[in-house]
Structure formats: structure tokens, C-alpha cells
Amino acid sequence: MGTDGVRALLEQAGTLTLQTGNLLNWGCPRKKCPSTPAEEVRDCIQKTLTEWSSKIGQDLNQEILEVLECKVDSAIEKINPEERDELKVSAKLFIIGSNSSSIRDAVDLARSALGVAQLDSVIIAPPPVEDGNSLSLEYLQPYWQELENLVQNRKIVAIGTSDLDKTLLEQLYLWAQVKPSSNQVNLASCCVMPPDLTAFAKQFDIQLLTHNDPKELLGEASFQEVLQETIQNMKAHEWIPLWLLRYSVIVKSRGIIKSKGYILQARRNAS
Image (cartoon, rainbow, N blue to C red; front, side, top):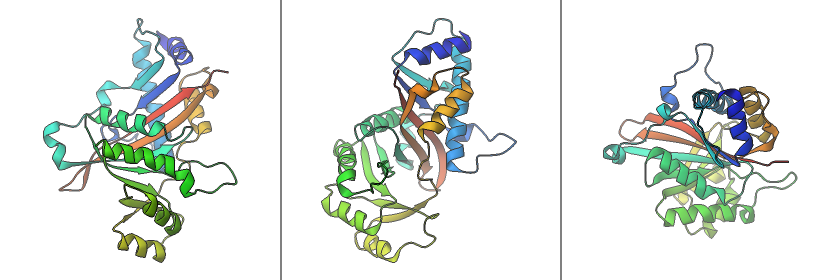
């Protein structure tokens, strides 16, 4: 089929779902490992697209699909049901060009990719707000309600937040039916945990965690750039990333990461 065929598939599809599989099986290129979370995401997308397009390129009978799945089967690693109780499956969800309705899709795809009925923990990064606006409880509510529905449907055990200050975390806690079990704090923005946040979290048994994700882990321009670099002459500007989910599977007794990967969904806006 070749590059032209891969480009044709992307120009006919309406949705692209990309799965990196377990990154720990990839190994790092000799030159350098990605130094930031944003670089890691770009590298993973590029490598998955390259591997996938080379495999698809050899398949002359590949049919045109509305939803295109970009993955390398050999990298996909489902969890052995016999080991499930020994493992903690966590995810962090970044909404990019979508709204709260995409949360269910992201969680269902992660459960399917890993072969589990339930994710132990899902943390949501602050959804993007328009310039000039700040994050508010009212803005967060539809996202949190989607997560609560997934907890009630036993698809997630615990849900958490990221980068909320004490005021917003308290507002969310008091309003929510399913309370946040954790809140991530970016150490780049504060080297010491704010005392008011620490006191509130301790009082209500909310775990404070640290992270080093940038405000924008994967933007529209960055995603389109990777597409353009990987698949020559394609209409990359038509593709909008909707969300990105990063998951990790940890062996509880030893604290060792057994598996880590990304799942991404993008939509094509044909002009």
C-alpha cells in the first residue's frame, strides 16, 4: 500500500485512535531518552505512527475505515487476570480539543487496551479554559460528573484532581458526590506544598501527589507537526487531538512499574 495508501486512509477516516502499547518494552534510542513529559509524548506518537504505517503499508487489502486504529499489536500488553489483584492500574487524563463527553471513551479504551474491567485510579488534568478565564467549580462540574458516573458504574475505583488550589479543591470536595481521593501538585510551580492545601488534604484524607507535567502536554500544533513529519504530504492541519490518556501498571508489593503507555484520540475536521 505504501505511504500514499496510509495517507489515503487518514484522509478518509473521521477518527484516529492511537495506542503506544507498553513503553517499557521499547527501550530508549541510544542518542537520548526524552527529557520531558512533552518530548516523551511526541516521541511515542511518532514511533507508533512510523511502525504502524510501515505495517499498514505492506497490506494491500487494507479497507477504508471511519475509525482508524493506529497501534502495533506486538507492543500491546494486556494484564493477566490471575495477576490483577497484585497490580494497581492508574491513569491521568488530559482533555485537549474536546469536552466532558470524551471521558467515557478514554476510560473504556484504556480498560479495553489493558484487558481490565476497572481502573484503580483516574486523575483528570485541569480541562483547557478560554483565554482570560480561570478554572472554576462550575467549569469543572460536568467533567467530575462524568467521572462520578464511571465510579458508580464500577469502571473506576477512585478519582482525583490535578493542580487545584485549596479554595477550588474545597469547593469541589463539598459539592461532589464522589469525593476526590487525591490532588496532584506541580513542583515546578511550588517547591513546597502550600500549608493551607496540606492542612485541608490532611483533614479530609486527600492524598497530595507531585507531578512534572507541563500545562499543555500535547497541543494541537504539536500533534499536527508530528503527523506531518511522520507521514509526508498529509493534511495534518485537519486533525484535532481530543484527549490523551497516560496509564501505568504498578506491582503493589514492590512499587515497580510493570507497564506504561499512552492512548490518544483525534478527530478530522475536513475543511
